[in-house]
Length: 240
Image 1 (spheres, rainbow, N blue to C red):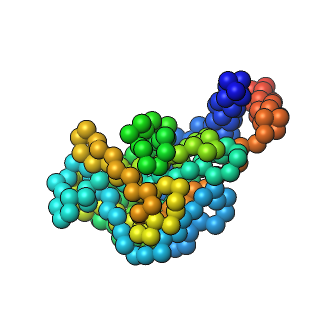
Image 2 (cartoon, rainbow, N blue to C red):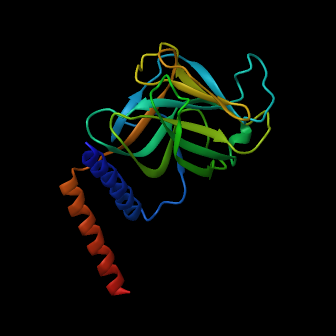
């Protein structure tokens, strides 16, 4: 058992290196806005069936209304199937957006959890920082093309989007959510306050979200891929 776990961890680490090399260590997130949801390379998706919306705001702003409007928000999910995956893109569905979001700095984080109901033992997997485009943000589907992240099958994860600057009454995103809780392997996440307090909404409410990526190849295929990438690097060095 220990040997199997060790081999799997080594494989995941190797995959991360291969994809980082292939993408030239991508340094920034790119955000694209589309009128329809992604349909290719889907690892997991949950399309909302209502027009209710959760609101992202800068976490340091003063809460109003029901007190749960000024939060970092996200969604937990279970990596499906028997194979590990590489997560490449995360898509959410904003209904409307404040004018201060354009050009605002944000963090997109990936966390692992023991399960979707017990998130007290969370562990940060990845944190990527970037700035929203200065124009072109509107309702629709926002796809974050992130630095590739290897994820283990059967493991519970979650993504969190957080603004880094504020306060500003126009620094908000209203994202469409499904109040039916139809996605049973995860739920909406929120994080509020300092120190941050996490809440999970499994079997109650989910964001409209889409995850794109690829299945990690078997170890033998991976070894050949790494060998090929090494060969390309060696030839490139010879040319220079």
